[in-house]
Amino acid sequence: MQESDWKSVLDAASNAALEYLGSLPDRPVFPTADHATIRAALDHPPTARGIDAVRVVDELARDLEPYVAAQASGRYFGYVVGGLHPAAFGADLLLTAWDQNASLYPSTPGVSVAEELAAEWLVDLLGLPGESSVGFVTGGQMATFTCLAAARHQVLRDVGWNVEADGLAGAPRITVVVKSGAHSTVLRALRFLGLGERALVTVACDDEDNMRPDALEKVLASVHGPTMIVVECGNVNTGSFDDFAAVADLAEAHRAAGNPTWVHVDGAVMLLAAAAPAMAARTAGLSRLDSWSTDGHKLLNVSYDCGIAICAHASAHRAAMSVQAAYLEQGEGGRDPMDWGPDFSRRARRRRRPGRADDRAGPPFRRPARREWSGRDRERRHVQSGARALARA
Image (cartoon, rainbow, N blue to C red; front, side, top):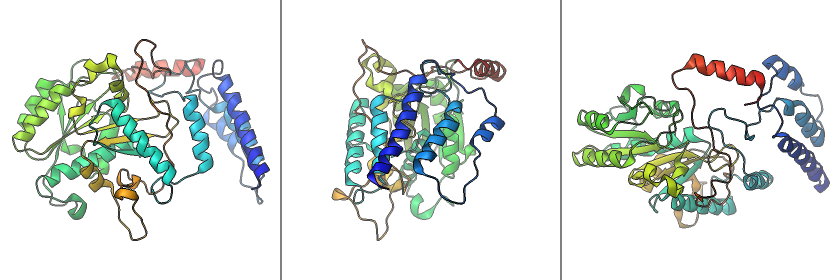
């Protein structure tokens, strides 16, 4: 395309984007049209010849915009969805224009270094061990998968089993300890990893979905051999935080008794709370655990998709994720982003430079909703259907 063509496309897209953003204070939060109506509006069969790029963008904006949910609106309270920060929006535009495959330093050194710095800032911001490794992935699901893959490697290596070389057939059994009501992405990650949901042992929680340390102690007393424990930093239903200091103490005792142990923190909702001094009591002991997963597109308010996997044990992280091939050059110092995530091809993760929360002023962005209605499907569906009918909240 000629330079003028790129400008025309960018103008068409930016005009439509600004109109949408300007409509957020007043537009319906949820589209009222049904599935058939939306399909009819968008179902334009492919043409025999190509269509001008500006026309494609114009028609997409015209046909799809009426059915776009206002997730960035301050009136949106569905699920735990963050709003887009203007700096992240600008960065996303640049990354789209640059179109870098961020999986290897030799091919895209600039964005590779940018991600390396973003990782260091984040680890420092959260007060996690300085030697922690960080992988940018697509979301909390893949971040959890990545961390639990590192955990699987470590606890099996500690009993003399190389899971990357020998697989799981004949391997020592791993017990996975989770709280009652653990998030579905944790269970799904265990299926991905070949451990299966029958490897789970469930720990009772209190009425706010906090894992009970006394119940965890009893469970660990009955568990022997390689052990993975999953706790939460911000439960999706209640916003609760598990007692990380108590969990760390129990994990250390379990490890000292000869049981290889790894504790993972599902922090998709509220891991960033560790950056707020006012939340220090709730996040005490967090840095004593082994891995943490979160979503940048929640409290960091970057655009979808951005997941973050952090491991205190870089060697286990790298062993679980790294890949070798004759045509793959290593970056300077032997470190590459491909060592930290499962993707061969991916765009650079959007970011804005984070800052420590100012407890007096409050965060400069809309917080996700704190609570859904756990265990009350009939009530929840009634409220959701009413909200959608009103298209207001």
